[in-house]
Length: 97
Image (tube, rainbow, N blue to C red; front, side, top):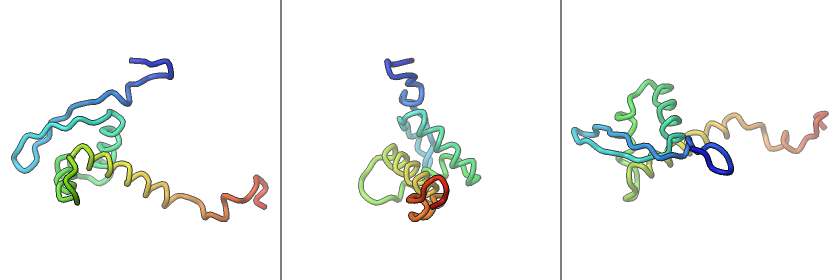
């Protein structure tokens, strides 16, 4: 699928069924979020179900899809913050001044 601005295959919603606590749960999320979530699971060596169950205890009454999206966003934001150069570096020009 394409829009006038380019491909939309990363934002097409995908439904995935997960068994959490013995209950089959269907979660709808954008493909890019699922791809990122799967990559995080692989990096941590855990199943998507296991990671979802750890998100179940999150604060508030938000749905699992919201918690997955918040988790993925927070994970990559933290990763970017960890790799970011110090603030003083961003103010330097190309010659390091």
